[in-house]
Each structure stands twice: as C-alpha cells, then as structure tokens.
Image (cartoon, one colour):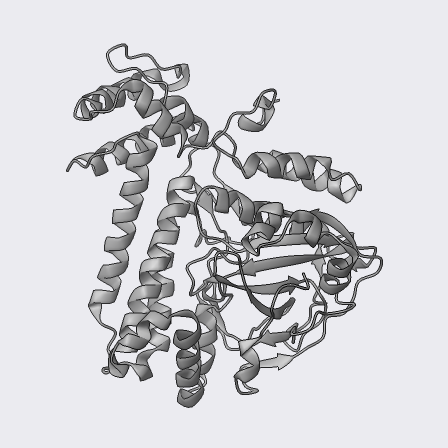
Length: 473
C-alpha cells in the first residue's frame, strides 16, 4: 500500500463541489474479505492488501500520505422526481491512484461515517448490504459488464439499527470515476452556470482528455455523445445478462459507464420481462423490460443539464437516436454471441425476440437455458426441455436453419457459447445464504461463492448446487 501514490483532484475544486471530511473509525475492525483480483489492478498482491497498515487505513484510523478524503454534492431524479440536493451520504473519496495497467482508479470508503450530505442517516453500511454489493460488482465484472468493484470488505463490532440491529461494515470500492449524472444536475437546477462549466472542464480534463482535441464549442456535445454511448452499451450488457439494477435514478448513473450503487439488484432467474428485485419500486419503473427506456430517459436528463453549455438550448434529436442505435447494436451483438452466431443476418432480431417470447411463456431459467442450448445438435432436434417442448421446437427449427448459415462446427459453437453463457450467476438464494452465514461470523460461503462468480464460465466439480435454481418445495 505504501508504494501507491495518492492524489485527490477534488481538492482543486471550489467549496461548492465537495467538503473535506474525515472517516469515523468503526469498533474492532477486521477483514471480511480481500479481493485479490481487484488488488492486482493496483499492482498489489492479496497479502499486501490484508495487513495491519491497510486495515488501519481503510477503517479510518490512520490514512496514508496523499489521502485527503472528501464527500461530494450532487442532485438526482429519484423514481422520476427531482431531488435538488443529495450527495455522498455514506461514501467518502480517499483519492485516486494509478494501477498496474496505467489506469487511474478512484478509491472510496462506503460506510465510514457521517458526511455533510448524510441527511437523516448515520453514514454506516450494514454488513449484509455491503456483502451484496461486493458480490454483485464482482459478478458483473466477471461477465464483462463494467462495474465499480470492491478492493476489500471490513467488518466491525459497531452496531447500527435498520429494521433490526446489525453490525457496520466498510466497503472499499474502486472505479475509474464515481462522478454521476446528478453532479451536473445539481448545478444546472441551481442555475449555477459558472460551477457547471467548471465541473465540465474538470471532468473532461481529468476523465475525458481525448475531448481536449475538439474545438471548445464542440466539447459539450461530444462529451454527451460519449457518455450516451457508454450508457447504452452498459444497459445492453445488463439486458443480455438478465441483470436488473433496481434503482436507476440519475444519481446512480456514472459518467464512466460503470454500474454504480448496487442496492436492490437482482439477476433474473425464471425469464420474466416484468422482473423487479426492488419492493420499493411500486410503479415498476425500473423492472427488467423498462431499463433500456429508463437509460434513455436518464441520458435526456443529463443532456438537459447541459443546455446552458450547448450552442442551442434545444437538445439535438441525434443524441437520443444515438442511444437507441448504440443500445440495439450492442444488445443484438451480445445475444448473437449467446446463441453462438458469429455472422449477422437481417432476421436475427426476430430470432431473439421469438426465443424470449417462448421463455416468457415457459418461465424457463434464463441463464440455465442458454448454457444448455450450447449442447443443441442441429439435425437431431435434441434438447432437454419437456416443460415447453412444443413452442420451443418451433423456435428450434428456425434456430437450426440459422445455424446452417454458420461455418463453425458444433464443437466450436459449444466452446464459443460456453465462453459467454455463465454456468454460475448470483442467484438470490445463494446470496441470501452467504449473507446469513456471514452475519453469524462464518465467511466460508462468501469466499466460495465469490470464487465461482469470478470464474462464471468454468464448471467446477461438485458445484452443481451453485449452477441451478432453487428446488421448489
């Protein structure tokens, strides 16, 4: 840890952007888990991360030289309703450091105590919720979907009260940037054009340096195009993986195109377009089949926050066309890969929608179906699916005809499909089991599940339980 060089560019910004804040240490901190994969991104080995110095640093007892923690302010549309002032209520940015791959990572402590933006909350993070975010970030990253990740997870004896008494945890998370759509919305809705422009210059100089080659008057539009493309690609990845974020508020959308703030998320098991893991979303605004449109809505909110920086206050229609085109392109590309198709055909979108219609009627397990489909042998019509044999067979006939246009052999297709269709996903019952045991002080299930999720495409001997949906009582 002492070999890393730390800076915090937020300190160069006006006081209206952020406030200095010291973490509030927890009682008797200990490591729940250290993420060797994430540590390698910083050029560290797991043992370099899991020592006393790192424990004292991440628990807030003794920060390293160059760490100057801050909490930032932002706004956001929450379930479609604008809230003018939110901010980092339980996240504290320690600073950023350059990784082994020359990428820069911003490091945050989530759950390290009160900040000026905590409102009525305590700034703490329950252990169970922290474990859920830890596992979700790693599951997404292993599937190739950009996400914030956890460097490590700390537990403590500090008691907090939610619906019941729990112990507090600190999640040490990392991302290329935690800047949200809501950071721009905050200044736009305050009519603070000077700070809005200052924030924009800060963001492109620090996180989008390629835009500095553009003429100054073109930079805001090019910036929006870049963020919109990243957002569309991200949500295409979510949809193809059957992942539902659950709270797609604009303050939970990162400019970097990384999945941010994993709360009431869920990986869809039985295919259901209306799947929602968030019981508080009583309007079903953020359910699975709404995510692409909500992504577009959020991009429009960001574009509106840029109105004062654009040559014309009217949002260019091309921005929203760009979102749709990028989303459709990347979603169809991902679904072709899941079906083992290496070429393109005009009827592929119909082939995909036809399959999803069959899956919706059958309630088939989404991940399990695609993993099994890799074993389908054209010409034999064989596929183990007694629950919906008739409608599926009609689709298989179309699929078999489509495979006839491919050059890959069945064995080649099997290998390709198994590289993109996971054997292991973060199923709800597995997650609940890991959390329950961890809250009792047993972290073995957490470690086992994390190992499988970080290698989701490789079948492990004796681990069939982790690849299957829960058995019905």
